[in-house]
Image (cartoon, rainbow, N blue to C red; front, side, top):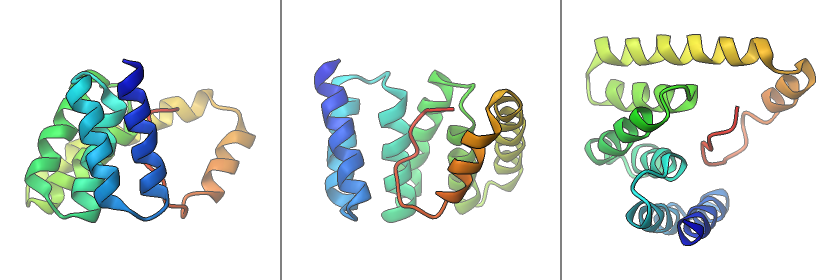
Length: 132
């Protein structure tokens, strides 16, 4: 488990530094070591879809991430983006609505200052992560 976390963290660093291929390799290694590692799965799906346009591969990982952490809005949103890219509009719409509902519930419980801080950082390049 610790080795998987190290690979996932390294993947995040590579992604932030603009090296999606190295990020993909590290997230994939984390998933290979720990197939139930939802954070690594969603980040692998993110790199595969947004940077490599490998939507079919990304779809597999995004679905697994959602199955493991159904309460995570970012995973549903990413899955929606991937489905939309593949032309699966009805299911994509459902995922976006699910993400919106989950995020609204989480934001209702979040301190306002933290939400505002995160909103100012939206434009920064970073892996999805599984925080609130």
